Length: 532
Image (cartoon, rainbow, N blue to C red):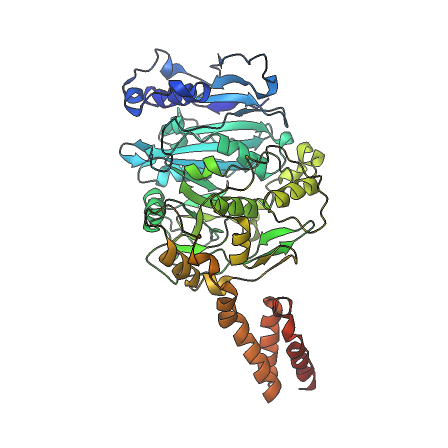
């Protein structure tokens, strides 16, 4: 079975680990922050290692052994996952009586950041962690949690390039007590969803939570930068998320960003069977609103930054093996129904090395090589995923996996049907209108964030006028009406260049699908192009 590994815990870190364990096992025993800070470390704290194992209370007679807390290692109470048989950290819960939205965990006066990385045999994982630690303005507040799925001989995510005895100043040496690694045999891997599920289990009440891929490069001062961007939303429920810009040409040798643009999430459509929303290529340009992050409808798995309560409340599903892309619409929709709002960042604070432009990444193994992946049933997972977020196609069999459906299902803050209405997603017809004209222009931000952000800053209020917003009218005015006007002009004047451009744009934006009443105009335009 995999174990949670970590380097020796320094005495000043022990009180945090001891506090976490006490609450995970016995919530009533959770000490106050002041008491925890004042408590002296145990005599052997500095010598604590991964081999330290403390047996927890035994399971009650009426409690199934698979659900019992089994042991504690390096601050994590562990339990057996009955689906995989693996020992995994117990989910953290806030102390009784604490307002999770108001509480902010601090180190040296700075809010802490939980940095979660899921890695499958990725040799750049350690570089990503080192980059985050080396380029943070306040590195002491960064707590790195890695789910490492490796085979013998693979580079470890906490393994520095050189031995610490030779170069103790390396980030993975100097900050070793801030890096926690969950080691998992790569043969057990079933995709990113389960790895990130385990990663979310490693969260321990940090103020903020950042999720990134294992092959990213951070820029100088990224921690202050992203926290400040989040604060500018004035929204406790804000989640900054996007598809990251490619690393090539993005970071100076000194570690500063060279980019003035950033991507925004607004383009998605149905794919596959039973069909789910898969996000496509996203536009990248200078923000239309430069003063703060801009509201968007969708969430991206490769970069997500929010208050820590987001990963506590919107947990990665336990039971979606072999799902690679559908996780994004699952987390995004569930997050929205829990009251969270998605925003594109103002500026990028890290960049992603994509295999399409990086020859050295093309040889990195993919999880579907593992024996665990070959045993999994991806179609069964997609049926569960779509059913949980009410995206199942009409007529789909009702035999989907309902394991812990309440925990991994929708929230109660907002109705999911309202999300689909405002995002112009027709679940029955399996169609989604492209929203970039509404989102990238800043129209969505002005109509919803500016007009309906709650006075207490706890999310956008969709209970009143916001629910009646006519998004299709905005998209028509900015996208489809101009295309139709060009088609009519091209037909009337028999201008081949106008016809070609308008027909291409009509095909790209699926004009006929979303406006079937214009089919006759499209036929006329095609006929006119043939004549000319």
